[in-house]
Length: 160
Length: 424
Image (tube, rainbow over all chains, first blue to last red; front, side):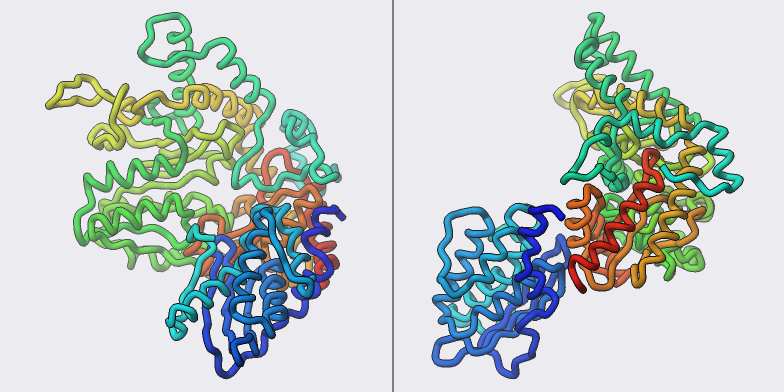
């Protein structure tokens, strides 16, 4: 099997793909957003519940390819216990990592680094980005006092 | 290469000397390795590869004959003009012996249909008029009509598809009315492979007084096309899907319609006399070819047609029926794999869309690429069709003259291995 293929579909990625986390619906969320990748037809529904300013529960229902599913699953797992500020910095750095720019990640997020192999496959970068862009959209609404609005972002809208 | 099944049809092809290995050897790009594997090119519905003859013809044109056409009075200009116009005549013969003035060089199928959506659309569509398309159209034969309907407050209707991916012909009569001005349909679907009964539909559409336009982007490369027998008023197709260069297309139109149709793009070459307050148009086909066209493309497309006709379009169709039947049979043996479109190869083309119940088409495509196998994955520029099929995307393998059973076997083996790899 090709080395590059294995770099993208790392064991961690395939594990998240086969048994994605964050699929248990949550009763009450503080903000929600939806993401869509029209090029692939991938969708994600994201709901986040907070407690004392940190993420308590994440519902991340991804319907799509292995990369977008795994990316959403990794995000759901890692966000728990993070503050909104930390989540924002994390998402921004994932974007940088996938675009091949300098990035900085905390020590406790090894699974995220498994996504880095995707950057060798330019057409698949948006698959990995979808969940994180959707998260940033939700945070934006939450911070601007529009948490009740469930906005939909598209990977094709240019702002990434 | 595997030995072909000893059917009567296979024997016929052998007699006619359809030798895939010999054909394959004419395509230098196919002899390379991709990701360590023999390149298996199964993305022909997107674009075909080019034989050495065509590549040489492009180089020869630029090395020996390059000049602008129709205007210059020097030797090179004469040579380029004559080759360009010669190719037009060749295309006219290729599509059933139409008049050479009925052949317009465009930049592709999309450009041809856009030309019609403006020139014809502005001429004949009024508010409340109807345009009839089908549910299986490629965006190229869909978006221009959506936009025309919006501009004119016209009504866009569509012929639905059946469960096996054919047009529901029982609905056609009910969808046609005395307000139907344009019927635009694909001759062969780029997703389903379905060959549509263009002749039948054109006949009833004409009874209602509608103009009939066929998108031949998928059909023209793979089967004999006679636009007169099809009974269409316009037929658009692209050179790059049939061994020719990218950036060149053909729009056939009936002479009387072309003569009365206003031009779409204006500028040099398409005019007769120009004043500041008045312009008269050149004769057809030049009225529709403003500016410097893709001269190298038009000239070398003739070489591509020569190559195809040396093999014979009937033989190409026969080869693809057999290979498509083989591919459908092998793919059907993979448990759970779902094939879109008709399963009977004799009524369809060689573009085979399929889905795996557990693996997204983009993962399929990435995995196959690691095995040197090129397919297409996505919505194939047919989003409304994808919705009708209830799919977000499909994987599509599409076959051509240089593909053989080895290529199909490589695809099937890789799809089986893929399931182990993803473990789902």
